[in-house]
Length: 260
Ligand SMILES: [Fe+2]
Image 1: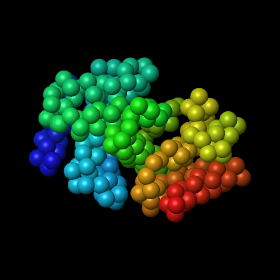
Image 2: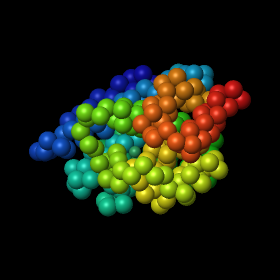
Image 3: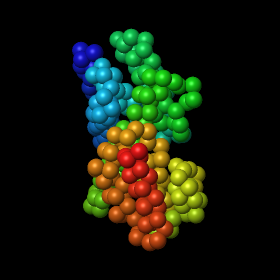
Image 4: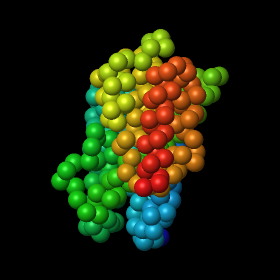
């Protein structure tokens, strides 16, 4: 397995480097996605180890993380956007890239299918109900690691006031301090906030806090608590009764998932 991991890491780096004539903003975005992929890979592996998965499965988890956004490079190159709705589903494109590049041929059937299903289900509202068994374990792990890394990036971004605006993170929404009724209703009833209810910039932050409801594994909650990403996002919200209520609710949820 170790040799295979090295082979795929080398391929990933070569593939990343194979795009020519990128403009400056594309170069920056390529780097952001590469770093994100590498962090998600490491996190998948660490979480798998915490759950005492076998070393081979922890390696495979690493690969799902490394490859999950591989479609992003061609998406940005060809369409100049990370918006799937305006271009293509980047998960489907990722699987296509791996197939065309012959990477999947290096893997046996079982790990190959695990990688495909994990990638394909990482950016959907939920894992397809047809995905079962080991494929489901890996798909859920990747979803956890991906969300945790996005929360990390956001918590750093929101707290770095001198940093440049990044509209792919804030969606260019109005900055008024209100939080929409339906957003509150969703999160306070223990549901993920639906994108269609998001109207203000603070709605986005509340939506991001609600991702905890979609985390699967205890080590994911432990990691989130240890790194204090939710707290960091909360600290950038106005401290009024509703916000305090929301944060308490989310925090209790996380604490309970660590204890139970
Ligand atoms: Fe993705």
